[in-house]
Image (spheres, rainbow, N blue to C red):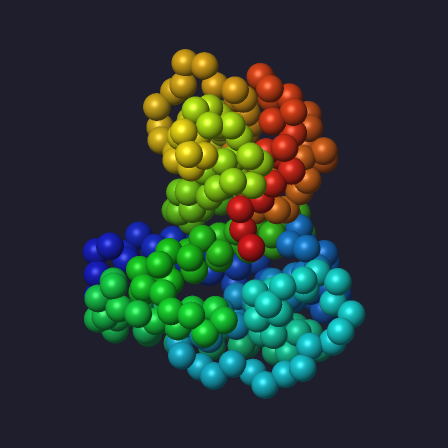
Length: 274
């Protein structure tokens, strides 16, 4: 590959996850494409449609002209409507159509990666007509693809890849979302600290600190007197922060020490993905 060094890790993580997705869905029979995934409102077919659609956008393909049905309960925002377009337009595609389109898109994207010569700070298309840097686009595709690989693994009963390169990208993205969840959304008090102690295939300890003006930050240093400490495993952490499960459903896998009221408030808003 000829991508810039700062893009290489993201390109490698994306490649591994997307190839795993292709391998997972290639042998599926028609009915298995309708299995429910942990991603709200989406089946196996829908998740793969989303992956195809996002890769088409990375290639610069025009978005489909399509009217969404009015009864999609999980579509509650403009961002969700934007994402749903690529999904709904493929809802009646057959298994061979899905695997063929996925294979073709991945061939095109692999060629794009091989020939990538743009600088990491190059502005490219982002959802809702916005712009983002090429580096951020690469990073978010690696993150998004790994999370959806996990959605498919859960739906198909094929666990794995919890410590893959994509998992490490996901770790960093999810940790970056914690300060907003703790300080702004849960309203943790000024001059407080909240610790996340995560074990398993991806292990880390992070402290979210709230300053005197209520702004949150995160670092790897332990806190001597945190208001709340969460102890859980990596799989449960990513499922919570990606909105794949509610805290009540995994209460036996999350230990909360300290201020119970604040702990409950944080768990209610801990999903950091859109």
